[in-house]
Image (cartoon, rainbow, N blue to C red; front, side, top):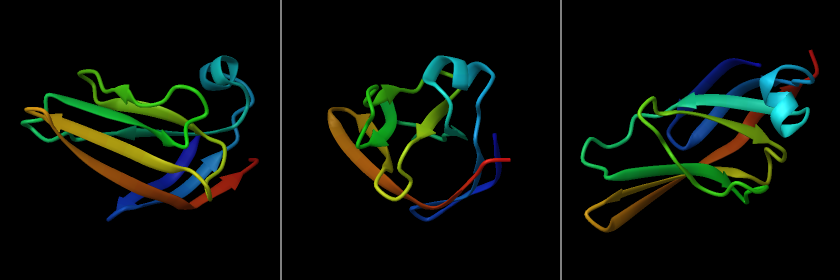
Length: 105
């Protein structure tokens, strides 16, 4: 599904391998997927993640495993968005996806 995925500063790099079968492709349709584990601020009351612009789901709150999977449809136009809330105050991060490479095999 992915190889050599890394986050450095606000950039995400690596290779996403096109999925045509399996759970992600069956649920969301064939495409390029990335799975990430997040480390939310310890004092955050909620952390939401999603792609901007979104292709439908919008921001989704992380659950206790802090794992999320995303279908990347436009690595040059989308950004990964993380919104952390603590005591009513929001902090937002945007991550550049242009360093990702799409591979068909």
